[in-house]
Length: 441
Ligand SMILES: Cc1ncc(COP(=O)(O)O)c(C=O)c1O
Image (cartoon, rainbow, N blue to C red; front, side):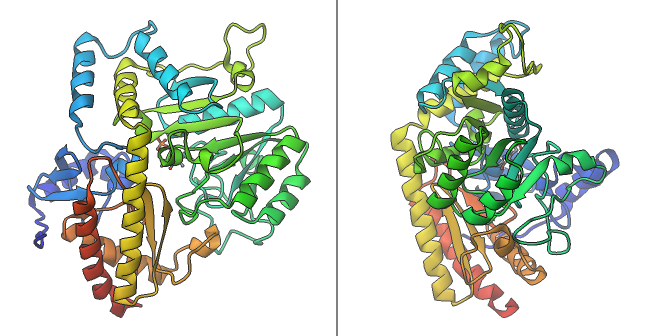
């Protein structure tokens, strides 16, 4: 792949306009780059072209949300037909039922499902459902895990060495200024993959905890799968203490046909989903057994968790989601996971060839590159030092300038339209990048 010059012109001008009308010039910090974001004009398959006319391979896939890449013909066809018929009604639509049936058929624990508009909303829905079901106020979550923007879900997400406290008893650290103290008190933070310490903390709050919220391969915690021991310990603890296990599979649902939870012999009470299940459109979903999900049943004598949403289950998202998930069948999941394995193996080899203290984590069809010799298994171990952040940024810039878009933690997600060719280009470009950044260690 040739070196791609990054011209400033049109994108720089757009950013100047953007800064006048949006804080930071954008509606989500994810798109920011220095000195300015690049603006996309179109995507096709696994390639994205920006306004300067530069085309890159997309390993970010709108932060792991495009499982079939951009503008998949089958999704475009189905959505275009739906657009002609209307995009949102104050009536239900049949496609919502079809999509609900499809999603429930993927996992025997999904007896009921409700759709929402984002992963944030799905996690919030699960937390509120757990509180309503148990009548308890508190939740427990893993230090550093990202679960979206809900006050309770975001606690400790950006904890750092200055405020994270004792490793055996992590502090509840707010993300946004102004987070109510009461929200911090109601969120109990446990360390990832450390069952004994986690149970000790959970036991101290056993009568008050509505649920334990777990991402089975949390990205910010290092993108390492949760150990069997950790998941089983937490699951058994919830059974013994009448709390719910809530799995956030907003990213990890792609890992198996029925989600990353298939890696473990546990059945979460509730699962939050989002991103790729929307086929490129805003989506979230919460699914679980009928008993727990019935807290949202408006036909019950007492409705414990009244639940609404203007655009929830709109027929455009439902159509795109149904087509995309039908295409992401058992064979497609297995193929993509094989490609993920190849990517991780090849990147590990490139690290070895370049002889740098780096490593790769991940599972299924996602991976993350760390500037650490040892694989980090907790948030504190995965936490980037200022030097590591600088090296990662240099690597990301090298990749971007050479035609590869990654997620800004140096993570990549694969799409079903990718082949070994794109993995080879990635590995070659990374190898050159690793050699370039060697001097920075
Ligand atoms: C694990 C996890 N949960 C929840 C969310 C929030 O999803 P959304 O951005 O759709 O609100 C994200 C988003 O990155 C996520 O990675």
